[in-house]
Amino acid sequence: MSSRITTISLAASSTTSSIQQKQDKTTSSSFWNARQDCWRPLIEDVVKISFGMPAKKKRTGSRGIPHRLNEDERRSFDQARRKGFLEVAGSAWRKERSDAPLLNTYRSLSDARGKPMIVLHKLSPSSSGEHVDRLVVDLSPLRLPDEFEKVEMELKERILLEFNVESTTAAAEEEEEEEDTKTTILEIDDSDESEEDDGYETRPIYQLSAYEVSWEVSRSVGKAAGKYLGTLFETVEEKVTKTKKPKGVKPGKGRRHGGYGIG
Image 1 (cartoon, rainbow, N blue to C red):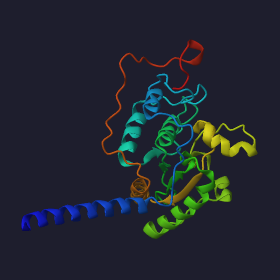
Image 2 (spheres, rainbow, N blue to C red; image 1 turned 180 degrees about the vertical axis):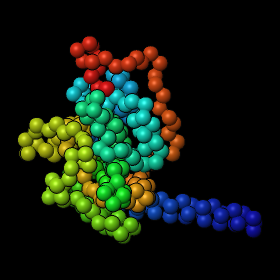
Image 3 (cartoon, rainbow, N blue to C red; image 1 turned 30 degrees about the vertical axis):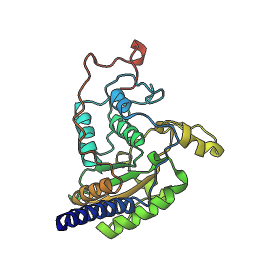
Image 4 (tube, one colour; image 1 turned 90 degrees about the horizontal axis):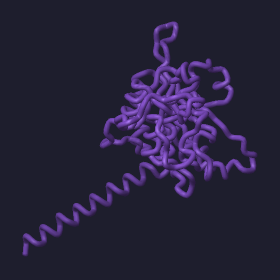
């Protein structure tokens, strides 16, 4: 009888612990939400177009927006999925594509998962030799524009509390930044202002403007904050494996030669 009571007590304790963990998890993400009743790409389709393959779901990729990754970009992409945030050199601009395929692909992945895009732009040292990098969180993949400002304010408070770093997000400051320090995200949004909210329901992410919150940070603080944000937004994919090139995929062709035009 005593053994039975002990077993029940242990089970109850385990259940209580499980409930507490669930509550803690809910509390940690209570300040942000992601819209579910909207258009989003499939994760497997995002990986496909990163190899230049056609996606099953229409509008996942676009001929005018490069998503095909080269070897170095794919390594960074895979590492970002495991760490929860992306690290890029400068703006991640690739001269051959006149754009930033890695940012385009990672933003699409973030949209597919309904998570903010977290990117650490590792910039060149200043004249004094000090590394001042730029940490950016793009909230647009949440697809809830009415809540962006609330999430932004909460993020600023949390980063200030955890790392004693104030946000640099301000229109005046961003206009003064040099071109090679900006996050390169192609924006195509020809909708009327009255239709802006509908765009978040029906349009692919590459047709929606980014909503960025940014901080100027040292390299070490940037990585620590990126890891913290990855945990906060649950962007870490611990069990994700290295993406492998599908069989039969050949180097991409240009649009005029019948290629998909997404690489």
